[in-house]
Image (cartoon, rainbow, N blue to C red; front, side, top):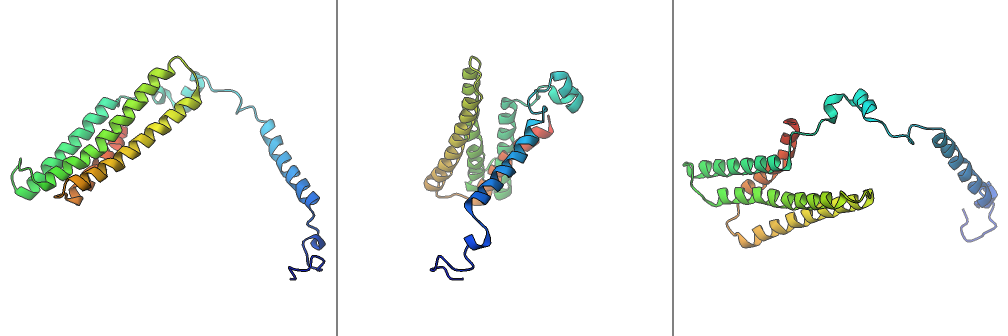
Length: 190
């Protein structure tokens, strides 16, 4: 193919790819999608509570038994159990605080404190949203709350690494992951 000569026999124009034909094909393709969505009434009407109960069952619409307080208590219990387990396994006695137990405690705190910040942000957002009915602001509020949680988690990991030289990585990370998995446990107890 000759890329320099614009009059070559195998150029794009000689093969029938002219801009008008491509543009018409795009319009036809978009028109087909518009017709399919225009005939659908399912997207326009919301479901009533009775219709949702028929589809999901009456149990699905009941409020969850799992509260934020219960979740924090569960995370704290898992953190303390892990801390005692690391203290017992290393020292051989139940209340021997050493670097493994302290690292385990710090790992749990790294999971609990940012979750608390997110919960406070969500509570603040819920009290603000009672008067207004704007969905966009609540989505932005939740995204900023999650951003605060991520930044706090990274900052706490950095602070622990810098200010605790006897850090044991295995207890820290294992307890952090266990405390995060409490969300899954809370879902099972729902």
